[in-house]
Length: 231
Image (cartoon, rainbow, N blue to C red; front, side):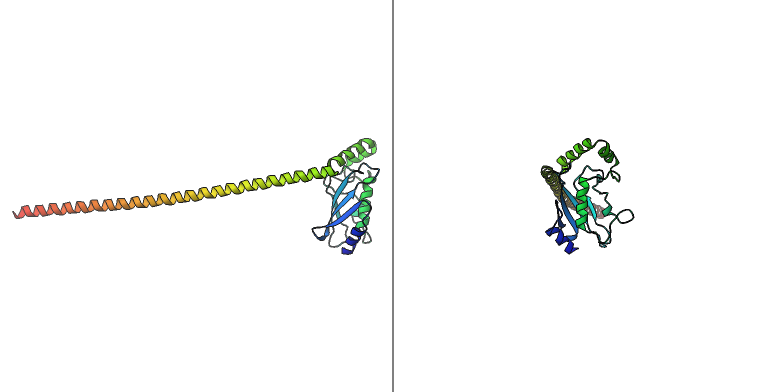
């Protein structure tokens, strides 16, 4: 696989570039220039490639990440192509390689196959209203597959990331304020408990003094009574 990847980097197919994703030779980022004389010729399309452990005995998994208006490419970017499936449904074999797969995908943009569609309505439109199909395909290219569209998508992603970061910062500040409120509440409770304890202590001292006074009065009364009895 490493040798094949080096070949792709040195001698890529016409209109195609491929590079490892995150340093992995099992995942590739691919950019594909729209073929000339097609509705896609002004577009630059991105694809993801995942190479299974059993490659080349199993085909790679290839999907468009750029939306494409095409009979053989669905809204999730999945591609209906013989080379991407094992027999009997497809024609993948160990003699195949990524180079030929990428060439075939670019050729599919130039020559859709309406007899084996993923998007039936688009295939019918391609056959019965070819000019309408071409106009819609060009609209998709202008909206999703041009440098301006990529810049707009990157700006939108950056704005979304900033908004998420701001929300996370607001949540953190709210948690911190709640923590401070909790601390202040805890300190208030401790102060209240201390004041209650002090009040209880004062009440106990006052009650003890009253009891002592009552005891002294009782003793005095008893002494007076004894003195009267002796007299």
